[in-house]
Each structure stands twice: as structure tokens, then as C-alpha cells.
Length: 361
Ligand SMILES: Cc1ncc(COP(=O)(O)O)c(C=O)c1O
Image 1 (cartoon, helix red, strand yellow):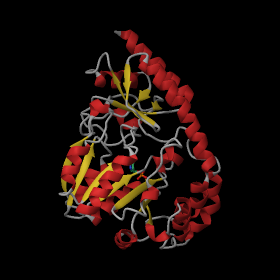
Image 2 (cartoon, rainbow, N blue to C red):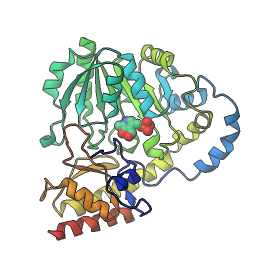
Image 3 (spheres, rainbow, N blue to C red):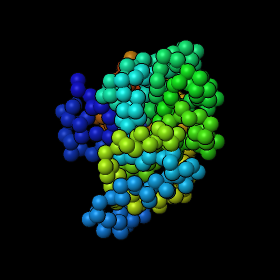
Image 4 (cartoon, helix red, strand yellow):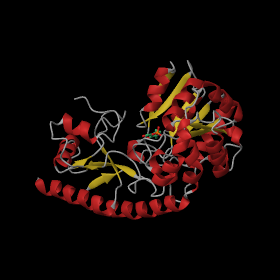
């Protein structure tokens, strides 16, 4: 079966299972904000329309200054990028022909980017039986043979968050053995207020590289905006490698307003908090496993029928619910489904279908 590499392609899934693509489905496979983009964005893009007849400012001053101000860091420590994906590929290029370590299951593109730039990859795995915790002992051993360690915090696809104390231990060790640690924080905007991003560690650790994306929180996968935060020596090399006009002028002009819209972020987090509790309550009471997520998606597995995940995927699909398969997440081998947390109505529909599945056998 030729499974799609990423979520958010419900029609591809329908075609794969010879279903009519006109049939409406609920898409739980893309881990985007259930609220969609902020309401004001449509007008703001119309207002920015006149910028498309000029080349973008090659230094993207508008968006770079907005990011630096928002993060409380110097502009020399920021590089804005065409989504988180460009940030990942630029960073992999920085370590071209070097040695990388990737802890799975995690976002696919680290591996793709490392392969593209001929890095030698050492694979490690989260401890599934211990809430997907980091294999710290083994990782510390391997760090001295590694140029760059890729971590995702919160991690896609599990939604779990590596403890800051563990990251600090790795950064300390990394400093002494010459290892950089890349932390992809594409989902950091969704974190509850008592769990922090790692931005404030940048000052202490020149070996820390943080990647961000605005795609997920603001539901703008089609606009493309992300950024890298790192020591200025790293940023200046990445800047040199970046293709010209990577950020289009529409995006450069709307970012200051977008990144400043914390009301939207707070509204999202409050919705997700309630929905996360609702789903956890409803699904664990039916004996489903949910990964220990702190964000807007989670892994699901039927504890009663753990070896029937593919059947569950198909059952949900036939009931109008598209989920994300996990065949291409190393370490999961399709044993789980990844689902986004959607609106209350949609989550209720999901719970109802899972109830039916439970009652079926
Ligand atoms: C962990 C992680 N990082 C980065 C990205 C890429 O985001 P963008 O759409 O901004 O390129 C994704 C997208 O799914 C992701 O899950």
C-alpha cells in the first residue's frame, strides 16, 4: 500500500481505499488548529495585496524584527524561513556530511533533510513503555560521536514534551563534546502556560538551535512561515545559504500582527484544554490508549484489539473520519493512529464512532 507521507490529504486516502472523493469526511489527520486562521487574516491579506508587485525586502526586516521582539532576543539570532520545513533543511545543510542522531518516532523531515545533505544518521528510540521518555543514558553515550542531535519538543507524533532538565543535561554535555542540539518547537505555541519554550536557554547554550513554525497554530500551511533561533555565528551561515526571496512580501507584511495575536492563541489553548480532557475521559473509559500529549494531537491505540489498528483506520474512514496512519513513523510501524484534537462537535462524532467500533465486536 502506498501510504501518503504526511497527514492532511483526505482525498488521497479516499482514493487509496477506492472511495468516492466527493463524500465529505472529517479530517483528523492534519495537526492544525481546529479554529482555523484568525478571522482578521483575510482582510489583512487583501490589504497587503499591493506588496505583491514588488520584490520582498531581501532581509525580511518586518517579520524578523517582529519575531525578535516577540521572543525577546536580538535580530542577529533570528532567521525567518519558508515554513518550518525550510528551517529543517537549512540546518541539515549546516551539518552537511556530518553525523546526526535522530530519536524516533518523530517528524519525518529530519531524516529526509539529513539524507539530502549526506549526514550519517544514528537512530535512537523513545521508550514507549515509559510514556515515550528519552533514552538518556544511551543518548549521553552517543553524543560525543554526534555533530547534531535532532529533537522535537513537543514531539510529533506523540505530543509529549521532553523535560527541560533533560534538555539542559544534553546541552551541557553537548558543549563539552562539540555537539549541537536542534529542538524543533513547531507546536510550542500550543503548550500549556506552565510548560515553557527553550528560547531563554539560547543565551547560555551556543550549541542550541531552535526551530519554529507558525503553520500549526495559525492554520497557514499554504502561507509558509517559520524561523530559526540560534547563536549569531550559526544564523549568519544559514542566512548565506538561504535562497533569495524565500519569504514572500504578503507574509513579511502580515507577520507582526499575526505573531502578536495572543488572544487567538489563548482562545485556542483554552478550547484544546477542555477538548483534551473530554477525549481523555471518553476514550480511556472505553479502553483506548492515548499518548501523554500536551498539545493538539495524540496517538491512539485500542487496548482491547491492539493488533487491529489498520482495521480501526478503515472502520473510521468508512464512518467519515480520516486519521493519520503511523506506518512511516519509525518505532510505531502503524500500531497507532495519530489524531488531531478538533472542535467539540467533531470530537463528539469521533467518540460516537469509536463507541460503535467497541460495540461491533
Ligand atoms: C514537528 C514539525 N516540524 C516542522 C513542520 C513543518 O512545518 P511547516 O509547515 O511550517 O513547514 C511540521 C509539519 O508537520 C512538523 O510536524
